[in-house]
Image 1 (cartoon, rainbow, N blue to C red):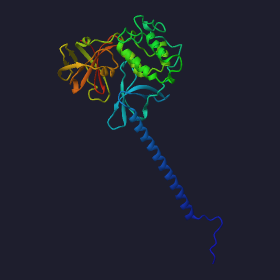
Image 2: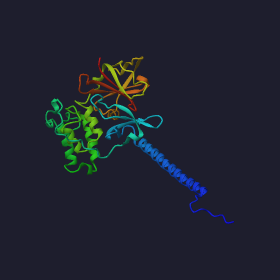
Image 3: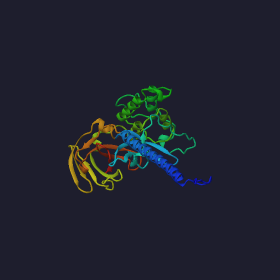
Image 4: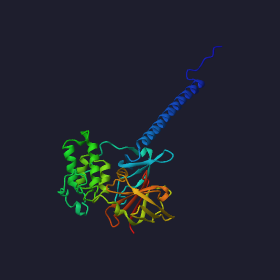
Length: 338
């Protein structure tokens, strides 16, 4: 007898097989997508680590929504390879820049062309004598590029850039970065006669030339004539700004006495370190964005060598000394006269 199938009868085995086939295809697609995402994340991490070279500028995600990126300085890759330590841009409370650990996804190479500072003619003007007018008067004591000349004014700096980059688009000038580096070197040699702040007409005009962080860091650190070594001699009392998570971060206080005979005594708060010092090189001084003369304390606190340089900032405790450990600058201390 012929086995007749009702026209509306469902072939259960075929239905199950087709369902399993669809489910398998979906599973394979899901696996492929997961692999692509994992590879993308891994590639992003590798690129972020490769682009974070100690001492070079990077951009870090300062704000997630709305998204905002700022330019800072790479300090080092942290153990584990999942984070990098970034020195953020200087602020009122951290004039040397706060050091913070960032996930690899929140760090990227610094843009060649920085964003121009936003204009806001209605913004409140700071109550400062050196910001009372758009620009200070030119310095009549010498040309802007005179090595070892008088402290540079705001107009000196803008004239330096205009003479070398012209009125055209500075970002199209192949010598732009070289000119900015020359300006930084002049600032280190001569100092500036104004306290640098990140608002105002001067900053807006500086931004038109695409000034990089190597210039703004030098402006921030070199108020006044370059320091002489003997200004570092004597007793200093300390407070410290360092990297969170570092075992020395929570320790503060102590005192340091630097003698002209090439020795020092450092009361670290947990013991006394006695040692000798040598003159700092120009390269080492550039690493702390300072011109003038400095010294290196040999085998100081924690067994590190420490570079000592003059500090001259705004505020009641703005004048003093600053110390960075060598070679990575991951630890910093700021002192005032004892």
